[in-house]
Length: 225
Image (cartoon, rainbow, N blue to C red; front, side, top):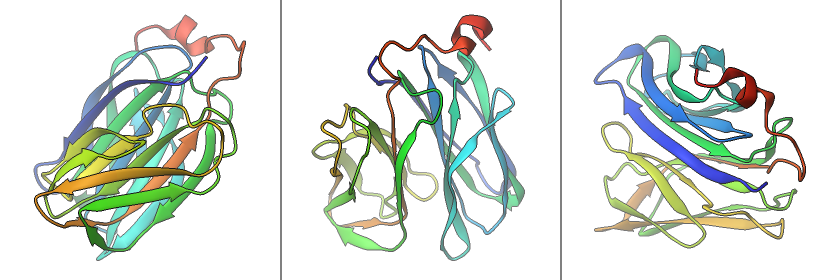
């Protein structure tokens, strides 16, 4: 079974708050959910949950400078149907959340490789490379930020899923297809109307379910959450 894109949802607080709650709908077999989160303070992330189940960090939240934080978490076999994503911090901040779900993902140890980067880059194009995917037919998901407010379009090997402009210009994109053969893979974005200000990257590749594997038991037993 190959990986396929399911759905994505974005949300933000209108001002400072200690939590952000928004609904996201998940479907398919052998599911995985990613939540990319950004907040404008050094507050500690207490948790990210979906349907009251705690997600696992892809990486610990990055300190992006000025006390701001950027993190990405994931959940294997999230409940199907519409359920709430809840991002909770230790105190108040302006929060952005982007949830993206996929079917056909490995249900045991899905994360293949991870790359992070912090630092300002400028230009009308932006490229980031995973230097060594390990498992054939992985997909890549990319959480990044373009805070000059430019119009963003996808470049080669890339599909943009969400763009959030109220706070910080958060973007979530992915490979849009399987990475095969395994190896280096470059994701690309374009900024229209002038040079973009690119900052803060989390890229993760995730594995497909093994050939012949049965659908996840949560799909068969839980149904709509």
